[in-house]
Image 1 (cartoon, rainbow, N blue to C red):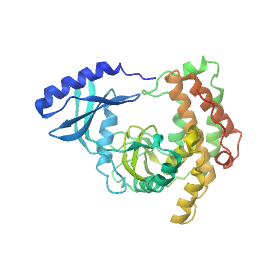
Image 2: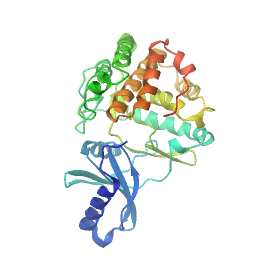
Image 3: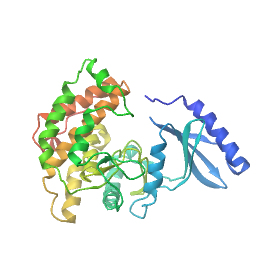
Image 4: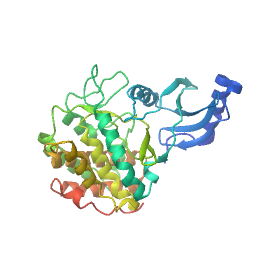
Length: 328
């Protein structure tokens, strides 16, 4: 479910923008992908393949442009060539990256690609954050709103401008706010185990076709709109949380792969189980809020079930015994 107008509306806008800005230098834009916050169109300009994205969230495109400045062999991020506004809609033109969405890979290709993905996460965590401040989702000026990492996580129980009204909608639903309040209490109990000296770049939205791969190598990491500053283990928890939603991947033990990767780099992170458990709860709460905002009640139910399982599990139990995800 999307809060954007129909693809045809933005396609018309894309065609007008391309014709006005580039004329005969550009090919006709064709719909490439449609997400919750923007739509992407493929075309060529002066013979070069590019992607035009149009959406309501200009900050997302600005963050993409900023992170592209840190791109390198271990962190492939397509450069943003042009950003602007047309008819109150934000747009960005980036170089075209090729590959298959990580979500669409079969288990054998996932296993082949995971080492490259984990290397990419390491490169992401090594980005120099000098000149930035705070924790949580950051803005293009490099500022994030919270003074500590636990504060940033606990804020998940509040409203945001991006997903307004979810608390009232959830309270008035069959689920109520009980799952959220229980999750917040469990998250608060884990706060003492969270690091106060870990502040790294986190993508915060891996999967959802935001990672492209080819031949066992990550070719692009896209859509940095949800990127935040905090503990880099969060992205590992993201993989653990969503892994059971991909039944074709059941033969790949993502937790075992992560453990082997961390052990190869040195001692395991301190309080690893507690930190992952806290982040799994946070990801579940975030999913409940977003799915409530989108009125996707089957997904709300599935994520509420997961949060309930997490609140009744000791740290480490969930990753070893993830529940079966009920289909929506």
